Image 1: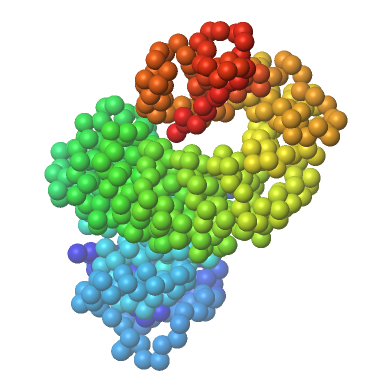
Image 2: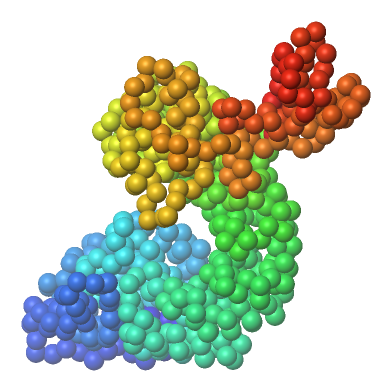
Amino acid sequence: MALITLRRNLCHFSDFRMNGALSALKNQSINHVHKAVKERLYPWLFCSLQPGPFRVRFHHACCKKFHSENGNDLHPVGEPGLPQVHDWDSFEQNLKNMDEQIFYRRLNNFTSSEEVLSFISTLQTLPDTMAAGALQRICEVGKKDGDQRPPKEILENPIFQALCVQFEQEPSSLSNTSLVTALQALTLLSVDPQSSLLLNLVAECQHRLKRGCLEVHNLCVLAESLLKLQGPGCATVDLIIHQLQGEKLEEFTPEDTVALYRILQTCTEKVDQHQTFLNKINSFSLSIVSKLSPKSISQMLTALVVLDQTQALPLVIKLGKYVVRHIPHFTNEELGKVLEAFIYFGHHDRFFITALERHVASLCLTMDPEAISKVMEYCSRKHILSKPILNAVAETFVCRSEEFSPCQISALIEPFGKLNYLPPNAPALFRKLEDMLFAQFNSFPPKTLLKLLHSCSLIECHPVNFMAKIFSPHFLQKLQGEESYLDRLSLAQLTQLFLTSILECPFYKGPKLLPKYQVKSFLTPCCSLETPMDFQLYKSVMFGLIDLLGARLYFASKVLTPYYYTIDVEIKLDEEGFVLPFKVDEDIHKRSPIMRLKH
């Protein structure tokens, strides 16, 4: 196993073969050494001051400035101080005898790159696998939130630089795991793919790949790293997938299986080519669902959506059973991905709804607005009238309305109209909504605003104060955008709002909706504001009426009313109460509609 030697709290390295200490720096003051190091670092660490993507080029300039001679350590005066240890001799460790699990546990407990680097500086020798793991941890915790660039203090740290130098100079001496782990770590940063460090690592990986030396886990790590560096068009990734197809799936760990899904989902244009392999993976994955973490379950469901694996419903159903157990442990983003997948595959069951209700009711006030929107979208799309969820979300909106974007507000309000439910705090909810609309009316995308106001009207919270604006030519033009005509769904929503202004708000005296923007029926094949008829229920009612009335000619189906709604079944009666054939238009005293044959 290759080793990196480190002495005391100094960046003090031998090469991977432990050939001895580096040659000494003589006749230079420590301050001069530090100055020289910085002068050689800056040209390649910050290679461009021009606007554009930040890139880092790794070379080996600095670590040769730090060495010991005859076992006596130098500590540059200008360098950042590392933790003081009173008894260095007792603290120095030989990691060949150290349990790797303890090492990685300590690494995972560190929350900053400075802690990792300080820890490494106290070690005498460092196996290459652990060096790669340390490099990966430095890169993971070193990035600032939302910033892909590594902090300057990390790049200037001699320990970090020396780690990179050793991986650049001797990649052929690394173990397979160390090699791919180092590459994976560096892809976390905005490293220039043409840097000598990455080119050397990638070349060595490709060499071992062609020789068939890499194990399943290493193949998966390598593929994901190359996808980040070179994108889905990378030919090497195709070779990796080909090799993985020849492996026994039983030898894949659950983590490797999920990684395989992530790899394949980046190659959506080749789904048909990989479908046979995907079918095998889908079948095999049924056996490992119980071993998956919440994060892995979310990632697997996301991949199934991206890859359009609608034939993998048994896997989706089994994943759904374990989602119920993990709901409290999902992050907001992971829960959102799970809900997106369930919407896509049409999955829901009462156990999941119950667990989701408990989760939302207890944590809604602290949940991310995007996650709340996904929960409401799921309820709306699956027609789930869950009072605990709707009530909790209504309370949350009143308390945190300023945190929601216009699209999130629409997604939050729409289910109330679609499910015809008013929460207990409805007055406060709609006052808050109205205040936000007055303040941010122009911030709402036109179609989002129309959908929002239409949802309000469905639960008799008529948006009278905004009707004049949405019926105005200016808004209608914005709604149409660059298209030559308005889509039918928008026209139907406008028509319903217009009919509301006539039937429910006779005091409204503002602009009217022009006839050219009105539809004649809300029931259309492509997109309809009416709930589709339940065909099985309709058949039962139809056969019952035929038995009762004696013939099919005594009732009509799908009858359009003057107000554009469709009646599922209508029976005509004369003045004495006798049933008339549905084609008769005279002597009709009463029409008896049956309109509840819906899903």
